[in-house]
Length: 178
Image (tube, rainbow, N blue to C red; front, top):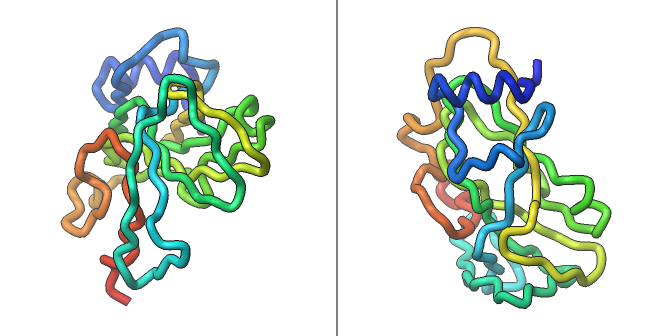
């Protein structure tokens, strides 16, 4: 079951959901709108290697905006820091963003219970488009969890994305043992 606006507010009052900064105007019927943070990143190398640490170059979105280009993967970040201690958060793109040809995630739209951080966005575009710091970029929806939890993300020893950040985070696939 997806939480409604009233349920999201109730969970925030209980401390099981946190959104910083919070703006009541961003609360939808059953979602919360998140915004593009100040930083983007691109990978340094043209060919990425899943077994190697692929380094990124982080840069600030200028006031006049930044033009995203097709055939480049951009890592973005949400302005909002979130914590979700009792629900499964999903990040979806806003339809207005999709109608500009912007995809905000390739595969990582679901968070784990216990995820506490900003969200790194995997941004790609179908044609050149100018984006801006602070623009609405996505919406968080929260699903109820059925059953107990023993393995919260923020308590996992091997969790790769627990360090609080305001910049995008590159893939940590190379840390996996396989």
